[in-house]
Amino acid sequence: MIPLPAALVAMAFDEEHEVIVALTDDGQVHRIDPATGEVLQSTPVLDTIELPDGHGGPPVPTVLVAGDRAYVTDPDGGRVVELGIADELRVAREIAVGGNPAGVAVVGLAPTTHD
Figure: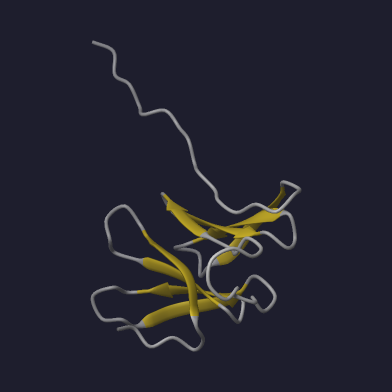
């Protein structure tokens, strides 16, 4: 178990399972070394998150890691926050999507080679 400063809301591993990105209910995002459990960096991204009791209720934020970026949904703010994982969790951009984003996906094409 990894000791965090607040309750875990969402988490994701990078592709190589070398980094965990975790969101806690105090609105902080944490970059964690999964081998040691050490919190390497933390940065505030959202306001305090009220988690619903049981099933149902409003959407809660989620986390996705793709490449060297982490994406955090902000259902209350109608946006997705993009963070640089290797860049001390710097906010790279905020993407206004409207509504209450409850999930996020990154889609891309695999590189192709021509013989």
